Length: 174
Image (tube, rainbow, N blue to C red):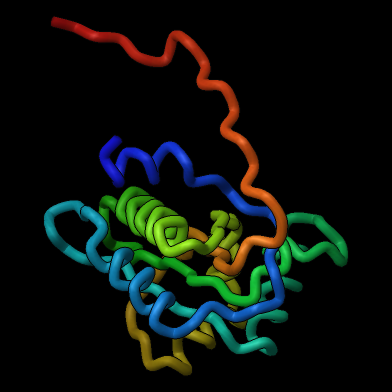
């Protein structure tokens, strides 16, 4: 089977990570895959923030858990790092382009032997002054919408099996 198609079928959302930071060269490859995601009109109006700093990670964990109403649970499932994907608010394809970046990040992580999972609530985080300040500190200008967080790390345990695919989801018109 074609390697890309095989990876698409085998990639799963991982909900348990080891406390081991992925190597820089692996993260760089994953980020590069995100940069090559398809995007509307070739605008390349997305960006990524790689969060490896433990203190900043905890700020995201607490805010994300509060937004989701999860109490003291880590909504990032213990992943040691994540990549936040944002898209320019004035981009008519804002969320779609960001979703394509997220898909590339997760597939690239899988292909490199790492686990990943899409964590929501980035939009709500970056609507707050606290998280807008992160962009300001990075000297990022403009209005940005948080699309998602790609939590990444080494898998702790087994990769879950694929759920059965539901019937009746494809129609051909010849």
